[in-house]
Image 1: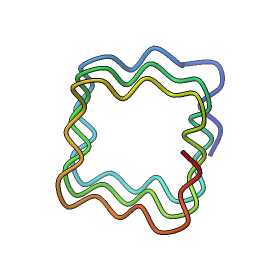
Image 2 (image 1 turned 90 degrees about the vertical axis):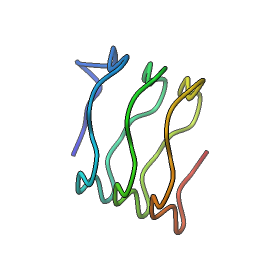
Image 3 (image 1 turned 30 degrees about the vertical axis):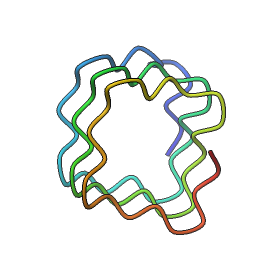
Image 4 (image 1 turned 180 degrees about the vertical axis):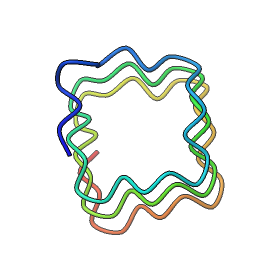
Length: 64
């Protein structure tokens, strides 16, 4: 999954989303709800995660 064209995800509700191997490089996830999201092997390099909720998110092998 490549989110390169939609990098502005501020305050987006992605609770429980399946984002395995998602390319979120440079995405603006400020204030996003990622509670319980599956981010296995996702690319979050350079992403803005300020005030993002990551409780219970699966971050195995995530590139941050």
